[in-house]
Image 1 (cartoon, rainbow, N blue to C red):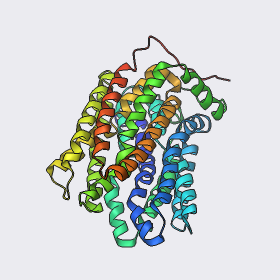
Image 2 (image 1 turned 30 degrees about the vertical axis):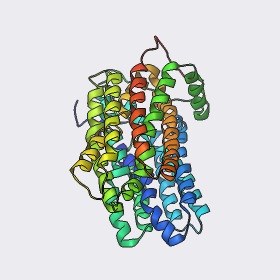
Image 3 (image 1 turned 90 degrees about the vertical axis):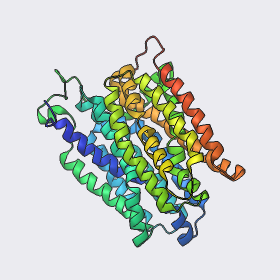
Length: 417
């Protein structure tokens, strides 16, 4: 047993899908100024489409987890990627901002929501017993590469051919990933005649109940679990201090200090590259250390980086900003593998669906912070108060991470039929 096990091949294919879907989540921030200048659309109207997509990204996740269990990884993932390719093609021909909201906000939001770390968690749980934390870290890193590390490439494409170029590149990535998923991805280890990596017996059977019923039955069971609510509130603060700030406000904040968008995109790319090491390392560490301790340390360290940021921002990319980008990148999505580990520990076979509901709170936190940060900038004329508030929220998230295991015993088991 080793790297030749098919589980690693499935991880690579799933990583390609996550990278393609991830590219859709941040490209809107790159093309906003061009849409305003060329099409005359307001930032508020464009932002409404982005906000709808961000909310759907979170809300769809738990339903997609249940649909994956019912209809299969390959079917659901390939369909979502095709939907993303169609959304990209329609967006570049949108005759008005209303259709931009429909094509980019609704269609792309549905597609990205079906290919999130809930999908990654399902792949990891189906194919791994040992090294599941490492596999989760690799899959998380792939999503972040799509979100951030692709930005300089997309920015260069936009400089050459305009805003439609990066949108079509994202669509092409989704189409290519859909073909790869359709050809290579397999549902279960038994489909290729093996057991899960590190398993002595394959004990995961496909779910047969209605996916909508299962999603809501898991949600109803979670309502009575203090552990679920602790994880949910922790992830709400996590989303507020990552997606809600960096996806929407880092580039405008840098522009306030005279930094050009290309330079800001390069820093976001550094965050994305550092995320690879951070998430893979977090997965490796989660296999060896109590996930609650990992979360506490990571959130506290993230708070330090956010507290330092307003004093490091300037017109040029200097060593202090590069240090921030590397430090924040190492911690940005590194909280996902230990959170997945806690979901698996406490909720067993329903872990992927439970994580989907936890991720809804992540996106709610991201949306609220995106709104609050914009309002703060309008009122205060600066993003400094919001960076410092986010640093304090990270400390609160660290406390919640520690408290996630304080309940004596809980088990969430969806109703089976």
